[in-house]
Image 1 (cartoon, rainbow, N blue to C red):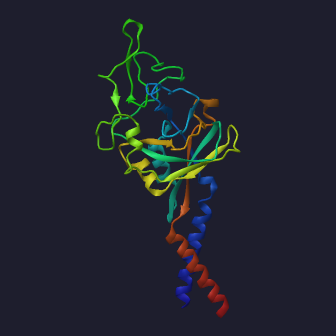
Image 2 (image 1 turned 90 degrees about the horizontal axis):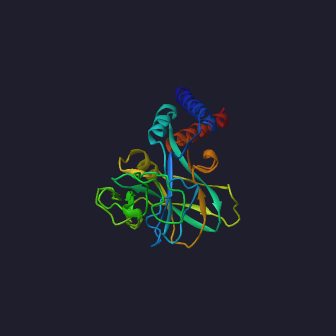
Image 3 (image 1 turned 120 degrees about the horizontal axis):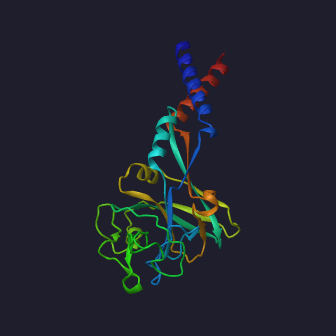
Length: 276
């Protein structure tokens, strides 16, 4: 019995040391490396917002905010810093820009074989208002190009790169991505009408969404959407030199087995004290 108690005490000590080692100082922020907004309104499907400082995050599925992270850097940080007996936890934080409202907004994975680009479009005053010869993401195309014959902007349907699903099938628009019920779509950001400009809104990613983000070769980041009619804008990384960029925070939490060992070890020590 003495040998068993010593083993349990040693296990408890190891678990406790690992627990205290993985404190808040181990958390690291990864700001978005690209972001943009899309509009599905019939007059705005070719609007590019790659350099817009804020975008409407969700409105009856007509608007989405897109953001992506340096997943290689995230994975490298996890590999180098995660203690034994722990698992990685990712928290997504976005920042309210204007028009807050009480609403639950979906956070979903972008799964597309064709990648999207963050162009230099900055406004909503008309379609294809980015630099001629470069691409921007729009609702219709992941990489939208246009020509300007006779001074008239015309979408380049031959060279623009369409949105696709995770298997490579060409889609009519980005809407076909969030109309697909098989895609990861299990989390919500809870907006509040009492929020003001600069207030953060956060949600912990579930295992499925984090795994998709880190390991799916056809994952192109995350996006927000909602069937609710709201006008809430989110800040993008262009605002205040990135101070309000969508951010993924990685920290480490004990695995269930680690917590069980802590509980067993604690109960064993309590029992030993009572019987001594």
